[in-house]
Amino acid sequence: MRNNVIAIIAVIGVISVVGLWGAALQSQQAAQRGRGAAAAAAVPDAPTNKTAFWTNEQIQAKWKDNETKHVNNSRLFNGPTNISANVRIVLEDDPPLTHDTTADPWIMTEGTATAITDGELAEGGKSIRNPVKRTVHAGDILYIPPGVPHHFADNKGFRALLIRFDTK
Image 1: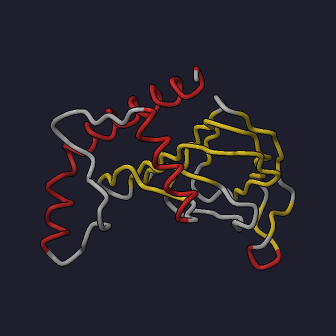
Image 2: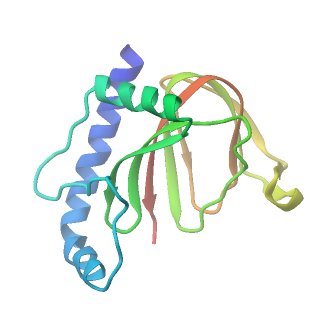
């Protein structure tokens, strides 16, 4: 329970920063929509003039819904310039990833996994060569910069909040 509270406090802090940053970029996002770019369906935009808040019960319900629907990700909000907060279940067969311009702070909320990071993608993106491996637990935070390969294995009830933001 304490770890969930810590994770929620961290998310609220990030959301506040996103809201301040979003206020400066709101007009740019509106202009893009005017040219035909559409926001993701049923995902709210991060507010720019007030805070946003999700209770632990709401987040737990999203995880349960993800499990029922066999989906690994639910977005809490979209922010300007490729920012989002996600309720994430990592699956054993998820491939390693890199992101060119986005950074991924992962806030572990439940279970354990082995984070496989750094190194370089190999075997056509199916593995990471020369990785750093570390066990992550509820309450841990893992920051993955743009361009850094990452993957999770040995998942035992692993759940995390993923706050993705664009660095460019």
